[in-house]
Amino acid sequence: MDDFLLRALLAGLGVAIIAAPLGSFVVWRRMAYFGDTLAHAALLGVALGFLLDVNATLGVAVVCLALAVILVGLQQQRRLANDTLLGILSHSTLSLGLIVLALMETLRVDLMAYLFGDILAVTSTDLWWIYATAAIALVILIVIWRPLLAITVHEELAQVEGVPVVWVRLALMLLIALVIAVAMKVVGILLITSLLIIPAAAARAFARTPEQMALIAAVIACIAVSGGLWGSLQWDLPAGPAIVVCAATLFFLSPLWSMYKQRRPLPG
Amino acid sequence: MNRDNPPLLEASNIDISFNGRQVLDQVSLRVHRGDIVTLIGPNGAGKSTLVRIALGLLKPDRGHVRLATGVRIGYMPQRLNIDGVLPLTVRRFLTLAQRCPEAELYTALEEVGCRHLLDSPMQSLSGGETQRVLLARAILRKPDLLILDEPVQGVDVNGQEDLYRLISQIRARHGCGILMISHDLHLVMSATDEVVCINRHVCCSGSPDTVRVDPSYVALFGRAPLLTPYSHHHDHAHDAHGNIILGPVDKQGANPAGEHSCGGGCNHG
Picture (cartoon, rainbow over the protein chains, first blue to last red):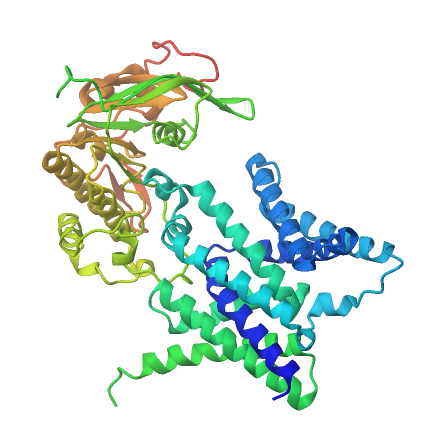
């Protein structure tokens, strides 16, 4: 296998392994739009990264985190509905990112690579970033798994029972920001949310516990990454979208499993 | 019961307003060990707000909430909406906040009559079963004080009687204090030691029999029929189409209102 293909596969799998379990929480907590908003803001992080001459991944993580904190603050106000707030931030940060990139005349940026991913151009430095981030994020996720599940089911009940709700919620946002920063390379800003929610949604048909769902989601995400890359190689498809379409195909096939399971106990 | 001991929970002179609207005005409340205190009041009276303040989920603008030292609270929230996309069994639900031995799970579920549901998905439970499982989770914490926000919500009338009886039994068995909210005017009367009727301020409080005849209670709810505890009782009949025909409940008239003093913003009497 060519080196760049191997790197692409490793990068995709690294992102899949953390994005899918985290994506389960995005699905359970109905945060898909929130993920989208952070992802759109990532472009601003990229632009700031160029402007300040720091690593783009770091720039993205910092901007996403800042936005997450601002969002939590704004949500306390309770003046505007959540989705309105998210919509405003989502599009204004994306536009701001586009403007800042356009203003940097000395730089010619491959915008398409940021918007839709450029997994075939992953470098070994990128790989290190991806795996270091994924490892840290996985450890944090495992540590906060239980309290996170508790506040997902009922936030106030969890709070009365002693779960530090605000901290757990902040940790979740940190995780999402980290994952967006590394997933951007694989599927691009506009498609990141799909990597979070589609494998998780597809896993629902197979899972009987939250943990099973997260694990199965990771497996499905890995299959989607491999399948998408294969399709990209075979038919010269754009890799990021091919991965998303592969995941979506698995999602639409997943109900067949439930139907098959329901049919089996019937006699005859 | 133990009126000489300090109360488990004491809320004094609670004021709170949202967006300039006064929701609670100088509300005070005490719950002693072994007592069942029921909050009743019309919609928007501030019952849930008061409970959230007692739980420490909300900070009052003025006033204090004091808990006796070392009091453990078991809380049963008003609604539980678990998204169908989250695969969660009753067993997992009960152990979300704290691990506990299998035997305790059985005992708690047994107590609320839901042992057979241990491995059922939460989303498959009926309204009454959900309430019982929530109650089991509260009991598992071995609480000194149980706070129940509309424990019989979404349960049919017979089920409501059963639930109130269950709550009385829990009080007797665990010796805890119970603070609960009820919408219900009749059934709850038989399962409570003290009723606090609020409509932003405390309208009246005392034993169910005292409150029942209190002019401010009557002004809010009309005169309720007398009930013997736990008997099956209908306060209305149905016509051929299943519509409700009000029976002995006199909703209007019979109102010697205006006798109690209350602050501004009061929409009764």
